[in-house]
Length: 304
Image 1 (cartoon, rainbow, N blue to C red):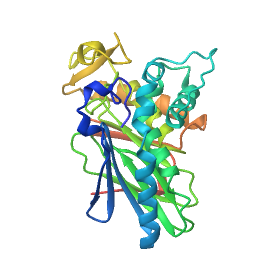
Image 2 (image 1 turned 90 degrees about the vertical axis):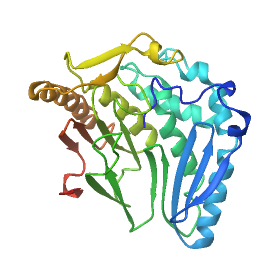
Image 3 (image 1 turned 90 degrees about the horizontal axis):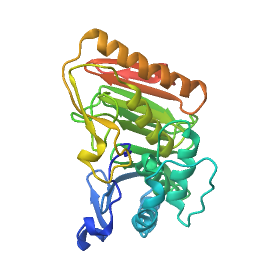
């Protein structure tokens, strides 16, 4: 999920040395689990067995040094970008975060908003050129980077909340579609949010863009209500890039008018991003109500 305001890449002092060793395991369904400090990936490659083995080896190798590269650049990644200042950083993942954040400089955003998606993108990029693979997903806490081979498709679940992550809808993404990144954000996840959305899922051309935009739309799903408790971000996380901004601590039962206003506000912003071709589609959920915009209405399958 999107990580703006979340101390997703702490200093080395925040984790015991044992957690700085890359942990690798094969899960059920021949999925690869890679964990390095706060980075926690579940990877699934489909294809012939030798190609899958090679892809998993490459993903494990790519993880080496990735966390340290992010930590080394935290002071830059945690502050909003200055459009008049060009940055040159000797770290591929950090540069991916910065270039993604630059596309949204008109909003309050820092490169850290793209960290989970950027990590997923870069792990995927190390695997996707292996011959003999049909498809790959790299899931970094709900921010997912995709590779879909010619003539193949993947089914992605859409969740209505971050706390009860049981899909209520699904989207089929084919090799001919341009969607290669999916991310979900909301007020009750690991990250801090300015808004009140239970879940905002974004479909984009890569996971880093989906990550940032899910955060931005989730921030826009908002209204004034006595049912919403807010505190300064620094009260929850002294290292937060949101600093004194008010973030959502608790959302009570909203009335129909409040829900309608919050959804409409988020939908207006989301539609602008779709019109500007920043993203392909979005699903927004708030207290049992929802709206979906953009691609691909015909591929949305809602469970009964």
